[in-house]
Length: 285
Ligand SMILES: [Zn+2]
Image (tube, rainbow, N blue to C red; front, side, top):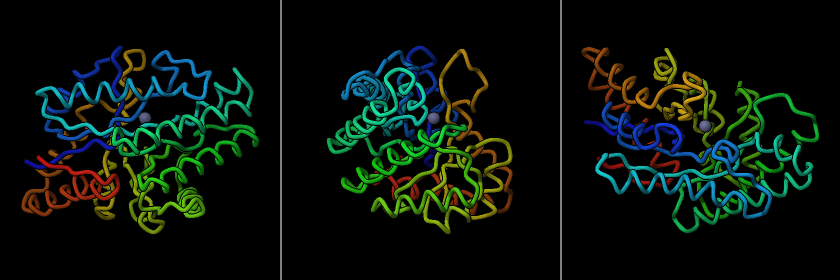
């Protein structure tokens, strides 16, 4: 048996909820990095500085339920503010107030980490075209999230535009300017360009889609694996299912024939050593 960690998954009580964690476990998964959902997807309308708190409490309550059950999966949470919140909030309350609310949200997430109720902060910038003023505000918000992470020594997970080499270098530069070591930055939804990320110090959470992990493995072992499962019945197939990471991992070990032992060794790094190092957690089975 080896540890198998999904670096970025969402669970929703209106979706499969903890049933998805059971499916993950039955397929051989052992650890989940559970990420808070965008506020609107769980029916929370953020209007006050403390407005993200119920979003984070919901994520943590799902994590607690799984950790206290006999499912056999250990859950750690990453809490924060989805970058697309800026578009919705700006429509509702204007850009200045939107930026303020999102920054307060990140500070709330930092408090959860300080109280050992989360292992990282989620931030980033929109993955779609936005006006310059929104882009600049998003960069300020992301840099603030990185500074908070530096202050308490935790990791950040980034949701951003597609990351070619230039984007990875830009994100690493913003992290350094914010005082955060790029080694504490995880690019979620990353392509399998492991060496590009390694050069800049950022950790890629490689999306475990068809063929991606084979490409990642050919480039090294400094990456994590994820599905970005969103647990939304209205968007089936929008992302990979909860069994994907354990299934792919096992398939790749089985198909490696004589090299199975060496490949298994690499997956110990991917699923245990890398997340332990980045999030300062313990992955034990
Ligand atoms: Zn996600």
